[in-house]
Image 1 (tube, helix red, strand yellow):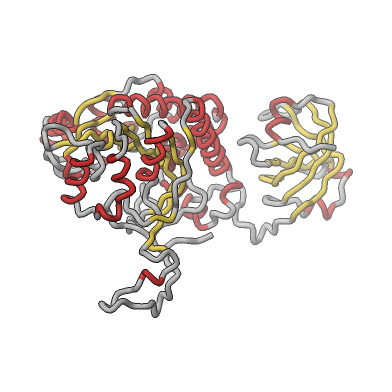
Image 2 (cartoon, rainbow, N blue to C red):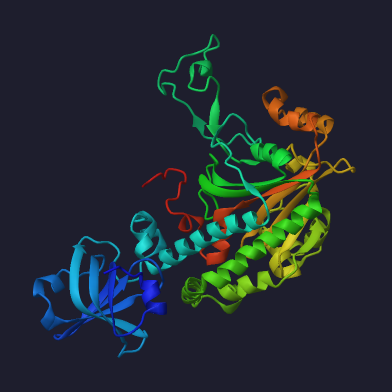
Length: 478
């Protein structure tokens, strides 16, 4: 008999039919005469109730059916006699596929802290919370490819090992095959990277943008979706050393085109989540309510599903960085010294400033443009005022910045001057500058941090809980 997934059994299963399911035991309860086994195979947030008549099965078998054990169950699908489910499986044959010692299996049917589950990340997928999070993560990854494919974009695989620093920040992980203890040295006593595998210093990428631009300036519209790395010693709920980025780059797009695409893209993903992940979203929404029920009303989060619908149905407000600074300086928190960080033209806005604009002032998503050039990367298009660049950041409630992007500088002369000012070695970036030498065009792009977006969609509070195996300072477990 062919195995059916539990999701299919619960949604389309016909009663009074022979059915085979396989999965892991979530709970077992019962009486002297009957055992009720909640079985889950990961296909849905919902469990299938298996009803086992004690008289029909070996006592030792039933004794070994514990939380975490894996089973194959064959029986008749029947209309449920109890509340909580429409159908149940009346077991006729049970095969114990894998035991789980209840004295050693850590994921027992009780409330576990998220910190405890991070320490058992290899097993946390079996909980309702993480099953929901990672089904949503999959759906969003699929939707990203679907969206760009429909728009005629090409998926470009940019290198993970690179010799360039796209952000100019220098917080990169070195990639080397040299002896870590006794590397070959130059006459100056420094490591001799000419003897290394690639013959030069190389690192893990912080962004696929620069290579993405090369593709866009030939193929028209491309996107990358892959892992990126930052050697930033930040132990916060918002930072990872390894995370995934979606980076579209588009020829013939100016800043307005870039903003339009970003807004349409985010709304498409949220719409997709609401349509295809409703069971998991409602579960996570309820979980968030339970978690925050002890908080004062004004400190509780907006209902998760309502928040997603709110963003979907809002037009994103667009304003310049300079206008935003004026709003912040005229705000009550600023006048009453409630902001932790200073507000002045030229600062890099902090999350508290971004969230004030979104959550208190405009009460909808915001796109800020035209940032001071001194706080932005070398490749951004310079405005005629000599002070600002055509950057854009999309700000969301509870998250702050969720997308960062810009129109790229297409002028070779201006780009070379800016690189010199920022000590970006032009001789090492000859290939990038060639795109401005030969057929340069107006072009733009942006980056969406995938985990930041999944945080927003799932309502989780820590970025380590939306990636399977988080990489953070002092932590590379699993």
